[in-house]
Image (cartoon, rainbow, N blue to C red; front, side):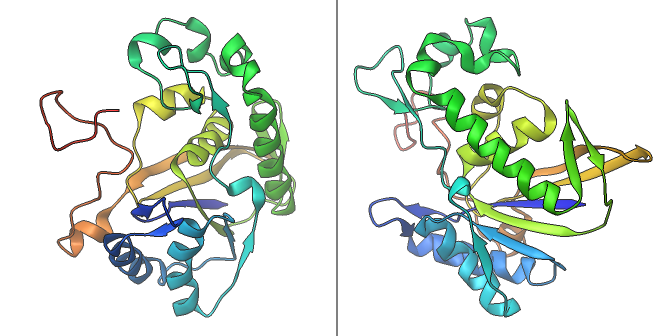
Length: 242
């Protein structure tokens, strides 16, 4: 089985849609994805994800199943250096890296800050919905792997968001999402591919073949958008700092 996770194109958060650059990215993305044989499409209910998916779906003459759990990871937490609550995955490195639990796939959401933001509940909901979907496609979660009840070569495609994507990957790969949120960056319109591996009959795990692939942009001479990144050097005044 293959899972293709697509992050929405360059966003205009003020209208929950895409910027002009984002629409161009979505078009280039659709030129790539139209050649992929997909059994079922799933999409976030948020506009920027649905707009990104719309060009691919139109070219393929297909529809997508809208899933609430594919929306951006919704929890707000009290980041140590700020008074107002903020998104779960936007921490300063000097704060989150000093907490050993945040590196642990089982303990990362047990800290007081995470519990206060109900992060553990949101994470449990999203990952349980993912497992329900995978069970429909023949794979049943058991401990840290999946029983291949009806093993197959199906391909499903999920149009969603960076924070949510890291949650899905953390569950499939048994990694703390804090490490993925802060150690990776999936650029707008990027494509991540995960496949099952069944080395012994009936026992499957997921392996990531590629993460945040933007080759469709490079092939067209289009530079990936900077969204989701912060400045490479502090003195880079034209890049986002906080």
